[in-house]
Length: 92
Image (cartoon, rainbow, N blue to C red; front, side, top):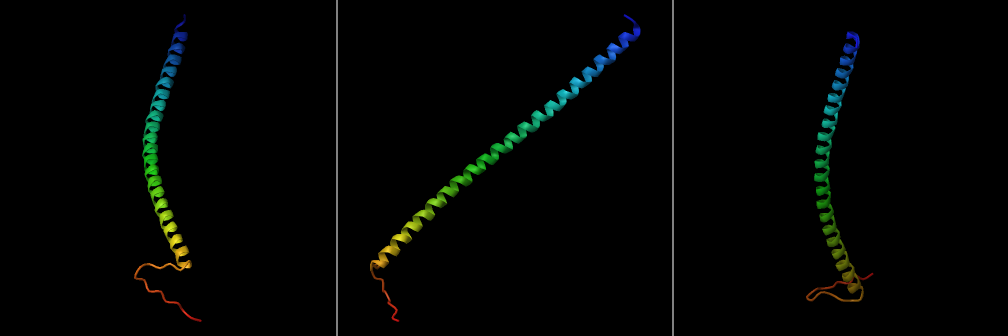
């Protein structure tokens, strides 16, 4: 093998080694970023679950209050009143 061929091979091997190291560093940085984003995603999913639980509780409360108000409206239309309640009927 000629001396010039050895230099070319050495340059190629060095270039490939630099490329492999650079790609390894790039892939490593992507893995770190991916890990960070996964942690943020988990935190946001936990936050979303908490908001959904609170929303469901509030929906149940609203439904319960609407049901109570609806029952009261039907009872009033049927002429029922609360004990000790004074009803004033406005004349026309």
